[in-house]
Image (cartoon, rainbow, N blue to C red):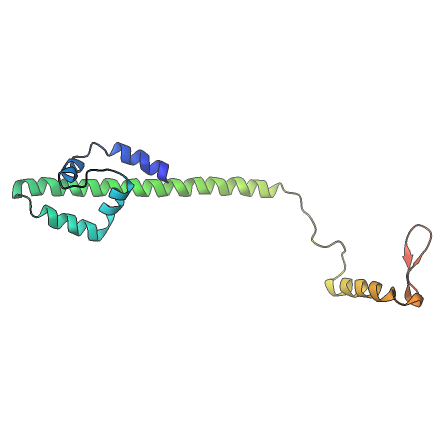
Length: 146
């Protein structure tokens, strides 16, 4: 956003209102000046300062101010629009990456969770009871006595 805003600010350096702002003591053009000009309270303050100018000069400077405000609004809206455009592109890339991620099962057995917990608990309790210990039979499988 700042990069895009800096590009717009660089293009606004030749605005006639900035020459008038320099005479009023606000000659440094940066994003804070643009932000200050877009603030409604500051606009009202600037317009009261411009009301003190002679009539012929006041209308010209007021129209320059209105033009500068319109350019400032365009600069901010373009900068914000670019932020959302870049974010949308990144989200599309992330979506495509997620589609190609391998699926990893969260559980290692197909048993319902309660039955699986019961089997694990049964295995742990059976270790203290010789009669219920699983017996290893040929092929490496365990057999449980009933």
